[in-house]
Length: 235
Figure 1 (cartoon, rainbow, N blue to C red):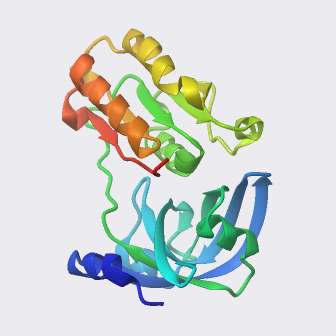
Figure 2: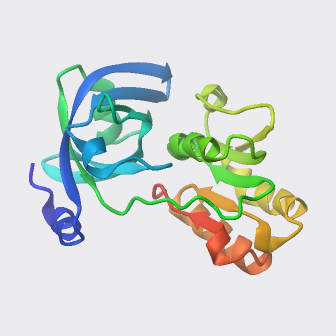
Figure 3: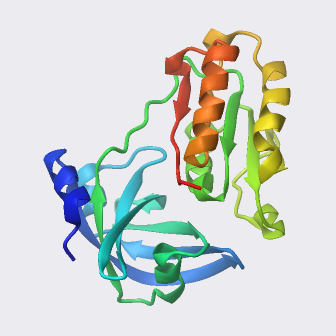
């Protein structure tokens, strides 16, 4: 598949292309699906870091369409990993629902990166939704003993049954989508004593992410280097 102008840009930015092969799939909930892959040499070539993501290329009515997904349980020795799909209308969801062992899909790695917060915060403050759940789980594993408060945006009742990898010292707060921004703004200040020592991680849709990032940096005075924010999808 030709990747169009986006593919050209990624090549100029030294993106690396790989082909993944499906080995299996499982329906986690009605609206969430996990697909297993062999990596086509990805992990040996690039290594692995927390919240690592790749761009998959889908055919959208004859045009290339790319979407980013976080690696789940990457195993460099075996050359395997999984990807999790929050299901909705679209070519990526359609592809994941039909994926069978032996199917292949093209991917590009470019732009991914993560730095462990230094110093580690006393509590991680995390805001996300079903699309960013794999990254949330990966983030929590970075510092497994550090407490965390997670505001998790839900749209459907089954969102509460998603595969959260949380422990007793993780405070998971599920919030209906229309109430997320207001809820975070009401509760987050109570958990930040020293803005310079806080660590806030935000990964929702682009509008929500921008709104909350501006609030955290301007209203709560959390330094830019203590905020990690990325819009995962466009509403």
